Length: 126
Image (cartoon, rainbow, N blue to C red; front, top):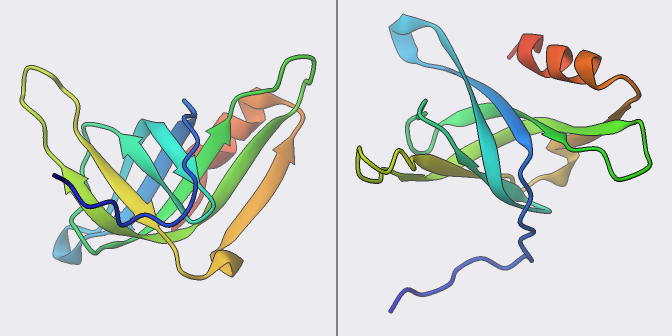
């Protein structure tokens, strides 16, 4: 039986995730994925590009527009990779969990043009 260590409520949300981290002599790495779930202090991101465990990481989550609204919301901030999951190669279900202890490292940005929101997330410096 697996012990549940999470304290916050997790919400199942398919949001675009853009993330980057520094990796020693090889420089800066960037990847994209989709969130499996989001909580107040973190998220689980499904992706093929895996950062190393315990790595500081910059994350931008672009939340889908709510019905009737033209604005998208981007959550942006610094976090730490707390868990990496490697599934079977056939399943292609790799992912990692990020969390922050300091909510001051997370910010919300409302974007009225979703294409600008995606561009801003992809080009955000680390």
